[in-house]
Amino acid sequence: MSNIILARMGEITLKGLNRGSFEIQLKGNLRYRLKKYGKLRIYQSQSRIWIEPKEEDNPYFANDESAREIMKAVTQVFGIVSVSLARKFEGGYDEVCSNTREYVASVLENNPEYKTFKVSSKRGNKSFPMNSPQICCELGGYILDKFPQLKVDVKKPDFIVNIEIRDYNYVYSGKMMAHRGLPVGTAGKGMLLLSGGIDSPVAGFMMASRGMPLDCVYFHSYPYTSDQAKQKVIDLAKIVSGFSGHINLHIVNFTQIQLDMVKNSPQDMITVTMRRVMLQIAEKLALKNDCKCLITGESLGQVASQTLEAITATNEVVKMPVLRPLIGIDKQATIDISREIGAFETSILPFEDCCTIFVARHPKTHPHPEDVTEAEKNLDINAMVESGVMGTETIEINPF
Image (cartoon, rainbow, N blue to C red; front, side):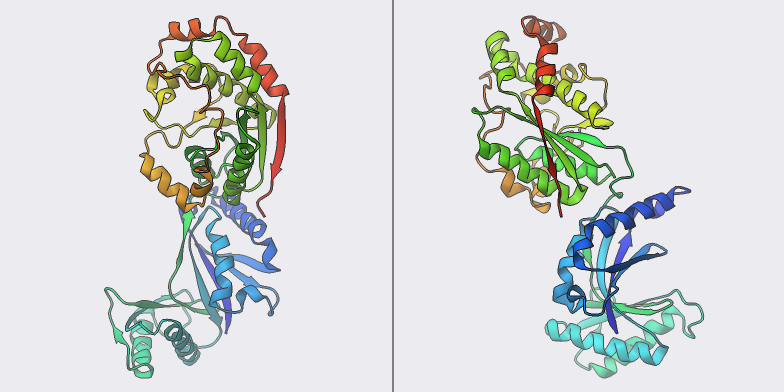
């Protein structure tokens, strides 16, 4: 009996004629994500993907504890719903019984508090002499006989003994939940406006979960924003790349642009004017890097620049779609996702970004088109945009 990882596909199974391309991308993403865990065999059977070592002495498959690291890595690959560590073996009903007995004994050794169980079976191999209900009934009785301290509870058992009869037989219990979604690489690439806050890393995570590879752009206003703030954004990009794969992080020198705005634009319109210039710079960088859209972490009404009028004012300066996955999400829900993906503690480090400096005391929350025109009449917007694009540094972020 050997260990094998069972990964369940989700939304991909609803696809039609293009399902095969999604499955190929998912298996490729798994190979990329798991390359540091030795030589693996990754193959598919119906809505499941099986992962097993090509070499018997692979330490990551030695026991349940060592397998948790590789299982957690699998859960970070979008397109997977859940993961289980299974035991693989050959044989008929007698072998099913003996291997299940050995497996249940190991489960109880690690979880002595377990008192109830149930059996669930799937018979993919139709030549097996018993059907699924018969397997559940007979195997449940066998387990009760061998482990008299256990009782059957089909509604709320302490653990479930899952048996799958296919070309090989598999027994497992429990599952580790994954992030669902679609495999990264099945949608066009997007350019994420990444700040040092909570929202934008979550926005990037959410778009990556829809199959979108990412590049990121960060606006750095040194010395008003510190090198620690820059490093914080690099660290956040690294966290996001753990889900999205390789990221090019474009760091725009934004200092002089902001100083010109402070000097030549009305104070109550600086936030909107700054956002408009940011989107134009981001669009030019996106076009240069084969990105099909921009992504922001804006949520409707959260701050002055995120009212419907302000969003309209920023949208009108770009032709590229601007995706806002958090637009209707409550702040606490965003924080919960940030914690889940491991970005929250980095996001709240106390280093200011360019959006928190030179902030007006009373920004205009509902700007009219004529307000925007008036605010930009003394600014050379085209020169600012070109200066921002030309003064960009690019850092490659490789997650693994």
